[in-house]
View (cartoon, rainbow, N blue to C red):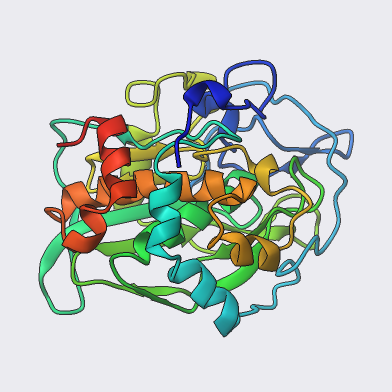
Length: 326
């Protein structure tokens, strides 16, 4: 289906939908002296104590306990129907959407050159490229980004242990429907996927911070500290800290923030989004699948275009062309 970039609608605001407009600072909200959590403009705390040297911009977010599905500490696994819908998207849908969304602006992964490779051993003991994701359950931008990431990775391997999740119910883009990687396992002959969901989507008993969930290793923190910066991410400011979601693909491709604005998922249920993924005319499918094709194109560059039926498909080839990947 023919698409014209001129038909795109910028849903972020009247300003350009840059990556900077689609990120969540990694530090969760903390109570201020006025009793209001400080949320959206705080500095990085990826598993380590970081000295806050900037004045926090305070936004009003009511504190409290559980905010949404998955927000009470109970893990809810993804049902078989939804899992099939998000991991077995028809090739026809990928090819029909291609790399252009007519509804929202979709940002492809950034290309990095000359960086040391990031590798790991897969379940067969073979050294393969590693993809690292750092995020948090409360984060609406992580919520949006997990959809195309799960879909793209499903083209190279298999998922188990995905859980239902929604972003924090009293933050921007509240209750964005998504999934969590906190108990997931991913197996692939081509790549290794590692994930860290640092915080839950609910506050601790004191109401001062999100509950800690998983802690990144020192090596993972070092990758975020190095790459999630203005040097590698155009439009990112030092005052933004190191925002999430953060994804590095073998240190050759980088995602900092969501590939599309989370309000594309507003007022939609997880089931409705998943069901619509097979329909390329769906507005939300348009954004998610275009993003998934971009991420697939990046991963194909790491796997030497294997599997070929995926990496040579029309939708992925359109994304490769847009990203100038040979």
